[in-house]
Length: 311
Image (cartoon, rainbow, N blue to C red):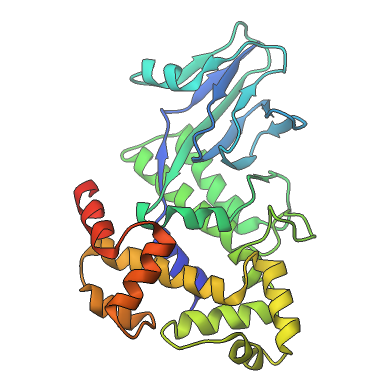
């Protein structure tokens, strides 16, 4: 059992391009609201700055790829002094072709932007995968597989043919998976609240062994003692290490994963509540319903009905 593959199957990431790209020159800026989305930017040519409140500007250059969760508003701009346009209004007003910005001809830049969409049942799992921003530098020698995907994107963007948008979107989706599965990204070496989560856990040899065990047999009555023995360490060492790396304790992680599987099953409507309960380790539908309501805020039946209406 591959916990990472389990997550990708639950999240089902899909990319959507926001317009057909941006061409800008001179003084220009484009502001984005804090909507909690996962956006991506890929710089085809030129340079610009990514500006966030309370943070130093990030310099972006040709070939860079950025993933950004919009927990804060931000601006893409030629410089900090420019008054930006609102991105929502600008993209909506441009029905066809590329969005053109700027007041001059100097410092031209071309870029693509878009957002990732996920299965709504478990979109909250995204917060465990990435820090708020990930910048993939064009010159990083470690990421040749990702750069191959970006090179294909660049080629398709510069010489579009039939179904070019479809091809670019699929390449972006593969780029996201490659970023998530790459252990040597330029994340901080020290685990902090911003970098804890499942990805950090899968990179820790002890914690990863416990996570795999839970995913392989989610219905088992796992205890901290049992998981510690499975990993070959003491109970106290295991519990402390798991919480420090993942951000929650091992039993809390198991319950969260059970609820993620339950939400996906309820959304798909392929199994009865009783069947779901037994499959993820509950001895009765009522015990499962109580745990689900406590975790999600509504009963399994109501969740399934709501998911059916929004499908």
